[in-house]
Image (cartoon, rainbow, N blue to C red):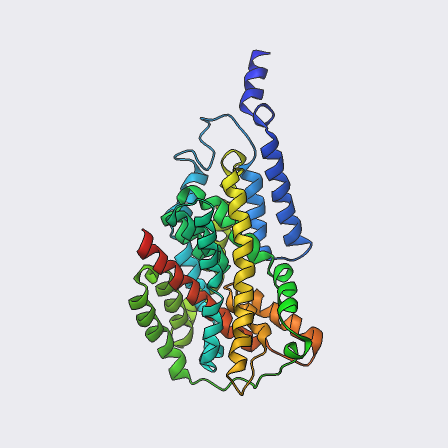
Length: 374
């Protein structure tokens, strides 16, 4: 009986709390959204299962938990806490991204910049709630809807809130098809949603090769704090566009990216131990993240409408929603909403321009905040 008591005291039954049960339910919800609703399954399946792993309670000292030094999970989690998973993710993103949609219509870059208003709006709101400046900046970056950038910045400025910020960022990325359409419909008229844009002009191979080199040099001088993110992004894109390293590009955007995504999602999910995760600050972070994401979407749409006041060649304001960095889901949302009004209106390639610009913009914003607040 004494041995049985010791076994129960060390196992799940002897350490289970209501918080663990709540987080286990969240993990199951994430898996349901991924499998049944097809919301970002490549992210939500690893994160959801990671939440299940992280919330099976046990007695401390067994050396198996993500917060116990030397455990397998702890070693894998160092890629998150040290901030080296995000640049590797950016390498794969760069190797799969086509910037020609942005190069063919450079003015659409402004929509990606306008959407970053969500980052700074959430930053000021967090300051008003009593968070200090570094923590407020890490929370604000959720508005960029860029999970790797949010992890990178929070690992530097707010490591104690890393789990909450990462889960919030990826949750809102997955819920792009739910959050953005109502905001778009609220801010645009049916006539605006039916605007048809001219096809993109062709972009030369020379320009596609020069772009990652020139863009990296410009952004690195503007925001040196973003060198590790944008350096890997543009390096991956150069592998793709150069035409002489296709094997490396294929590896970066397929097997390599998939492996890092699995490790990042699983360890981020496993970091959500109820005792550390279920706090008033975490709830505030989720609410601020929702507000920043909504503000970023609205900022892109409204700025597109503003540009139309001064332009003879009209922009469909729907594509402003793609200024957030959720590639390519925000662009797909823009296409779906446009098709509701006019099934023959194809805006997705136009929407990809602010979408990829938003990736660059959120990384620059993270670099600026890191340099200012580190």
